[in-house]
Image (cartoon, rainbow, N blue to C red; front, side, top):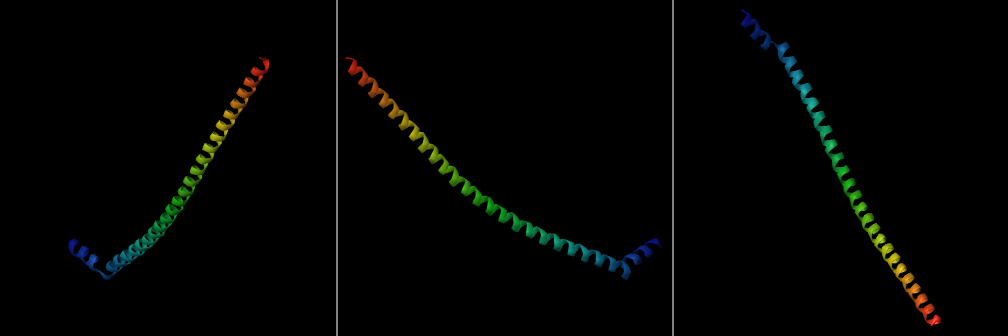
Length: 99
């Protein structure tokens, strides 16, 4: 008797309607989650493109900075050599005057 009641309740139109509504609600929720997932994938793709662009800009700026630092070091080196040469010339000139 209990088995008959249970099988009747599962096969009743009311139960099937509830199951169909529940399945429909889950399908709608799944569709919304898929749309949100697609939107997030698109946003992630856009952010990766921006990151890549910024990385390229950073690399360009960093290379330019290194070039400028090398130029500065070369200028300082040349300036120091010129000072040494000037001092050497002064000293050798002063030495010849004293002779």
